[in-house]
Image (cartoon, rainbow over all chains, first blue to last red; front, side):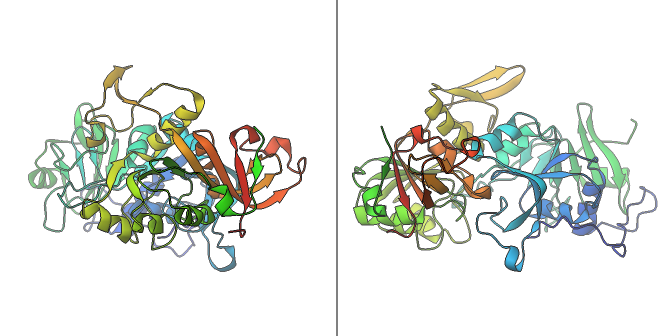
Length: 236
Length: 222
């Protein structure tokens, strides 16, 4: 896992973010992470979930002013620690050693989750098994009979932040859509997802329905054919 | 009651009774009171309910206590990890009960116990499997779940430094559950790296005031 917040070096390729007509094809994970980073406003307080969302930090500019929260009790978390900087007392929510940035603050677990539940975080970015058209999120449990349930902070994050961004592939390996009319996996939260970043498109979950913000190598009509959902184009 | 400075970890966990609910601090290894857990293994109490964020890693600490068959039930947020094989085996064999609680609700339920709150409505988990069988109420248009306090008979926590009165300071993210668990148990035992003279800690920086702390032991005096 990488929790780097290094400034993007000059030679970092700019992700291929084009409009519905001219994008070449689906984006890779790194390009999706770059899209999410692009949409995080300057100075936002942000929690990046364990796994794929953690890579968003790699794409935050040095002058983004973004303050990262880690739910085990810290604000202004820095990049992953290496070598002599590794300190067993300083880890992220994935239990990976990290560093602190100037202006960091520590607090206990009840305060950390009060911060989340109380709506003080601007954005959290989470992975997902499924998201429904109504913004229901499923990301903690497959529901398989032999699975040992483990939720961690997923449910608290899902309902707490002002905006919940989801990062996922749009289809499973076998091609089943993950943006669905109703989740079939056990829910993490009801009606909590605001925006869904995928390799094929970015979607807004709105009271009117699922709005396609941008597509990559496909179009709204083609996507609508592959998803079992009505899709709205931007602006109507 | 004044805080007892213990000669070793065995003295610090003396008297834990069978059937106790034991709050165990730490998040991963950060803040994990390993010496106290090892002493609890030697002490012998059984039929325990353990409340902790995880359900043991590898084969030491909490995992070793589980492996000894001394824990009846685990209340935690995240039992399943790459190295939680001891718990996994007991759970699949039906030899241990599990209550999964969202991490924030776990912390807040202990905070409520320590703060004298009877129960609280919380939006976390509403409409999910973890709210099944719990009372719910819509407040300001939003569904909430009624959550009850979790109180411990004993709390075992790790802190950085104590003074001789039992005031505690922590270090970085090793603070995690310590300050909350310290308020929520009848007997609170802290393992610290250093015990300093009373007055040597800046009162402005004390995180857990001594009123919550019953016993302190310096690490390495097992």
